Each structure stands twice: as C-alpha cells, then as structure tokens.
Image (cartoon, helix red, strand yellow):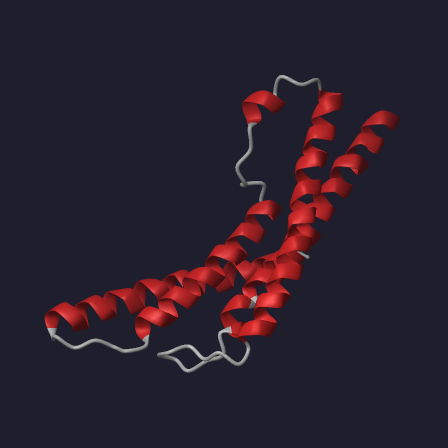
Length: 156
C-alpha cells in the first residue's frame, strides 16, 4: 500500500511540474513570439483534472481533508470514534457514487475526441471512478484503523 501511495505522489509531482512547464512555455510563445501551441492548454487542463482527483484521494490517506475539528474536539473520545467513522463512511459512499457516475460518463464520452489532442475524452473522465475506488479503499482502511485502535485500547 505504501508503494501505491508513493507512486501516486510521484505522478502528482510529475503532473504539477508538467503543468508549470507547459503553461510557462505557452505564455512565452504566445506573448513573446506571437505563436501558441495548439494543444498545450488542453493538456494542462486534462492534467489539472487528474491531479485534482488523485490529490483528493491522497488527501484522504494523508488525513488532510477538510474537517470541523472544533466540533469534534468537544466530543468525548468514545464519540469521536463514531464521528470519525461517520466521516469516513460518507467518503466511502461518495466513492461509490464517483465510480457509478464516473463509469457512466466514461462510457458516454469514449467516442468523443478532444479538439486539440484528438484523444478520447474518456481518458480524462476515467479519473472519476479511479478517485472513487481510491477514496473507498483509503476510507475503508481508515475505518478499520479506527476500530482496530479502539479494540487494542480497550484491551490495554
């Protein structure tokens, strides 16, 4: 699992660097030489979509998603587990929605080609079900961790 996280993080780093380089080159060519690459804006947009969804999934794993800590911190420790479990259960269910809706969009857009790159648009939209799967996996692992921790604390 650690290897998968590392691979995703390196992919994200590559995507951000590629977006930065492509955008910089595009601006230089457009304003410095009055020429523009026809495909760079589209590729940057596609990379941004992928980086957003992969980053959201990794955010679950790294515990950096937005939370209302002020409310949860007032709860006793026993209720915090239930609140945390509820949050990860909602994320898990949202992952199911992302998979179902994402696969529907992927199927609908497979024959639609992007204007500049001439790639099937499903290549972009496959990020939705992938994020859904990763979100389900990571939130399921967190639920397991919360209740495993509770069991070991109860025994000790």
